[in-house]
Image (cartoon, rainbow, N blue to C red; front, side, top):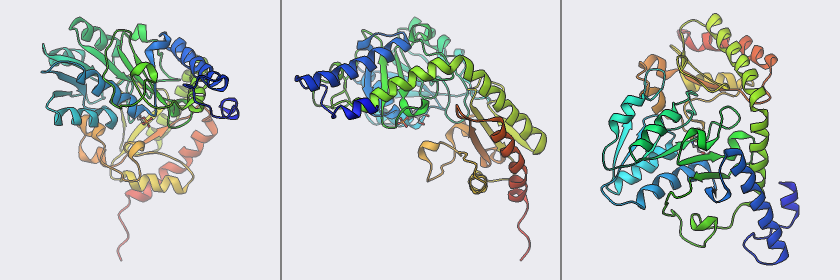
Length: 362
Ligand code: PLP
């Protein structure tokens, strides 16, 4: 990023030597990301976020097709997908939201049963951002293809933890966001399998193979490519190590705090995710109590934090209100240590006990 920044910020679409240098940074980043996904250069479209990649996938793939068109997605998708579906419904398209099990998994049979002759697109996330559950994307994509339905996966949470080879996943469209794997904020990309037609959602110049107008964020894209290389290189070693730390945190919570529920525990989960419900406590109070102790956790979806909304993901699991009200998410990072985990375990039982205790009589 530093090298791209120091080079003067020239426009990669300019024909002069400086512009061609910026173009070569952009092309190099595109080639490296394509290589890491097992894709080709023209299959990668850069965007300004994971949200934009999701919107581009859904709105773009549906709007280019004839009506009637029907779209299938899971009930626990990120708002970037759910709100795009809402827009499609407002435009007169039909959508089906698939239920999930109590552990947050989509059943392949439910998925197949939801497909109709006019279904054009299905979107099921690779891993959930709140509870970390990993969906059976390979099986779902296979079923979709057998029915002639395009398959999109929001893989924003996957890099560094799950394999990303698009050929093996069998997906047609896949969204990524750089800041989820150590890259800068404000850059994402959409993998679009060769031959899949998409209508642009923005209108302007011919950048990104005519799919996404607007001058590319060359510096951010350079950072995204490097971050993905590092995340992929470290994945085989880091993912099991972080899973051990997560399991240590989970076991420590189970043994030191009564009345807890580990959400998604019965399903394959991302190694860095631990979503815990504390009966009789409130998520926001837990978040603040832990924040005061220097421990950063999330409640609901961090992307919309600031205004804590009840989690649509926990609602879709069918959890009783007492488990829904007191859920928080611990996200381990690449640098999280056992000392930090033990530090959380030394503070958490006290914070939970204080918040559960009825307020003293005045
Ligand atoms: N999809 C998932 C699963 C996410 O977790 C997020 C962000 O947290 C997004 C999409 C949106 O990505 P961005 O923040 O780059 O818009």
